[in-house]
Structures are given as structure tokens and as C-alpha cells.
Image (cartoon, rainbow, N blue to C red; front, side, top):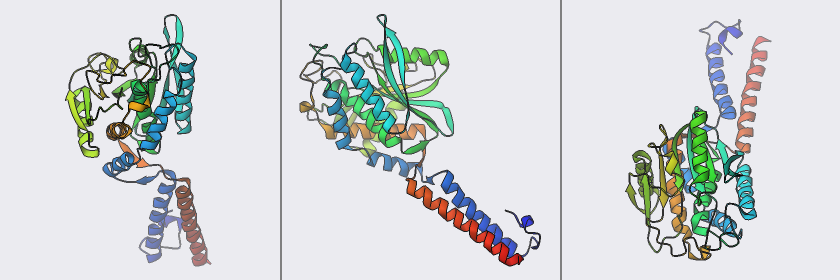
Length: 345
């Protein structure tokens, strides 16, 4: 609506200026109905971190542990993969299985996508392996620390971050067949290179819930990501991080490192290196030995880092907020029409 729409008013007429003001107000209200409520990135990250729930995190670990085994070629592995897929779908994310071949058999990673709004071609990945192993791998491999703990962090981050908008795309990935030599993550990287996917960063979480009575956490990988994790550990948690700018083999960050995937970067968090959990790869790797407050802090460190990297821009409003903004916009529109008719009568 412009003054020219009302030929009975000259451009310098007081009513014309009032109409311009009404137009601007309506534009603001319309923007609210189509976009979302804006806030500073820093405040949004603070809000995101505050939503990480130890209760929810614990429930994910427990559910994954309760599959008798998640060993790569078992029914339990396929069932756990389906559970992870359904959780991602429940957050409103786009979800797909990512197939690859190992030993002549097809297996799957599971990938959930939160599309970026400004630069969707830029991709950041939060990942963890969902499979397990033990001394009785085919029948009894609870894998609570290794690696239900890391997969639970990815699920909790996905749940919280799905309520926000980001400049870049975020992918949440449960990698499979890690225990046989990083098979699923290497297959993903090979495909990403072939397709030209622009992965800018990958954060990996592997064995993050056995504290051993300490608040320490070990961070390793590309400098920028490691420093970002390190800084957020200090800002949002009581963790005592140590860091190394090396690409250490043994988990799914490895093939995403800049030295092996040009253009990409990667980092991972682990409770300790060398591993100090005596239940590692045993049937006794259960929740009985885990520190969920400690693991939740590592999750907070991770979610703050990915939110900053991907560029959080806004929180998605509740449906009631959208409806109220729409009603307000319609009210202003109605007032403008009524007033115009009365002035032209």
C-alpha cells in the first residue's frame, strides 16, 4: 500500500503519512507470521544449551543399551537403527538410510537433515557410531559407554536444534559398522567426495559417559573445531578439557579430517585417551558405571559448538505464536480497509 493507492490524498497529506506508518506496521507483523522471532546468536546459543536434558539423555542411553546387542550383523543392530530413525523423524527432520557394502552385505548409516536457510550447501555434521561390540558380541554387547553415550548426545542435540533455524545445513548421523574399522563413516566420506558435498565440519562423540570421578574430556582434531569445543567447555560446563591438534585413528571423525577430505574439518570428544574404562568392549559396559551429569555437560559443549558453527539465526515459534501474529496482521489490515472506506465515503 502506497500513498498513490489513495488518489484523494496528496503525498504530503497527514493521512498519507499515517497510511505509510500503518503499512510499515503491517509489514512487521507479516514478517513475524512468515519468519520467526529474531534474537542475537549469543542469546540463542545460551537458550539451546539450557535445553539439554540429562533426563532425556539418560533415556536414550538406556534404550540403546537395552538391545541385547547392536553388533553390526545382528537383528539388534537393525532394530536400534530403526529406533534412531524414528527418534529423528519425531523431531520433524528429514531422515534417510545411507546404504553401503561391507563383506558383500549391505548395511546402513542413518542420516537426519536440518536444512540451512541461507547457505544450505554448507554442511556441518554431528555424528557418533551406533553399533557395539564385546567379548560376546553376537549375543550380549550392551555398549552403554561405547557408544550409546555418543549416539545419545547426537539424539539430544538433534531434538533441541530442530527447534531453531540455521544459516548452514546440519546433519545428524548414526554411523554403523564402526567397530570393524570405521566402515560406515568412510563410506559416507567416499560418497560425499564423489558427489561434491560441501562438508565444512564434523563433530564426533565416542565414549563420553565414563568419568572415572574426573571432569576431564579429551578433544582432538582440526585446530578450529578443537578450539571451539574447548572454549564452549569453559563457557557452558564444569569440564576440564585437554586438547590435541592431531587426527587420531579409531573413531568416525578420522576420514572427515582436512588431511583426508580437503575442505572438511573434524574433531572428536572422548572421556580419555588412552581409554580408562575397564568395561570397554565387554558385556559389563552398562549404565551402572556411567556418569550422566558428566555426559550431559559434554553434550552441552557439543551443541553450543554446532549451533555457533552452523550459524543459529532464530527460534521456531510455537504454533500459538504464529496464529497470534497472523490474527494481529489481519486486524491491522481490517482497520486500514475500514478507515479507508470511511474517509472515502
